[in-house]
Every structure is written in C-alpha cells, then in structure tokens.
Amino acid sequence: GQQICDALRMLNQVCFKALLRDPEAAGLKSDMINHITLTLRAGCDRAQEVFEELETSSVRTRQGDSWDWWLTGG
Image (tube, rainbow, N blue to C red; front, side):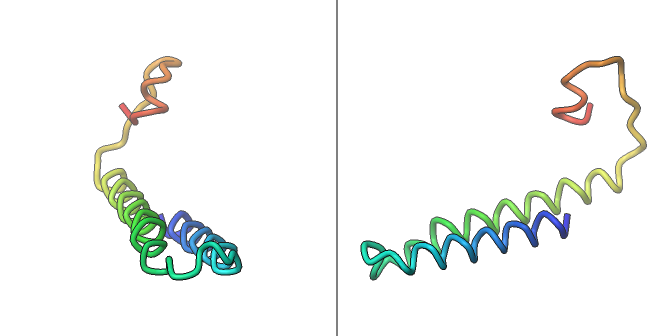
C-alpha cells in the first residue's frame, strides 16, 4: 500500500510541476489541488484500505483460472 501511495505522491508532484510551468494554468493552483491532489489522495486512501482488508481477511485460494478472482479477489 505504501508503495502505491508513494507513486501517487510522485505523480502529483510531476503533474504540479508541469502544470505550474504552463502559463494557461496561472491562478488554478487551488483547482489543481481540488481535482488532482485530492483525487490522488483518495486513491491512496482506498489502496491502503484494500491492502488492510486483504491482510486481515482469511487466506484466499484461487479458483480455476477465473478472471473474476484476479479482478475482485474472490
């Protein structure tokens, strides 16, 4: 979970650096925070929740070659 959050933080930094160099983005810092940073932070929070759920759930066994298992974990 932490690696995903670190990657999302880096993505946020890359987005901000690129957008802040763009003259058309002048004055949009609060919008960028609301739409980019908060979205990525929500993704990080959700990823951590999923990892915590998986750590506390019982051991799952793969059933056949079902793609459902790979996509949903069950």
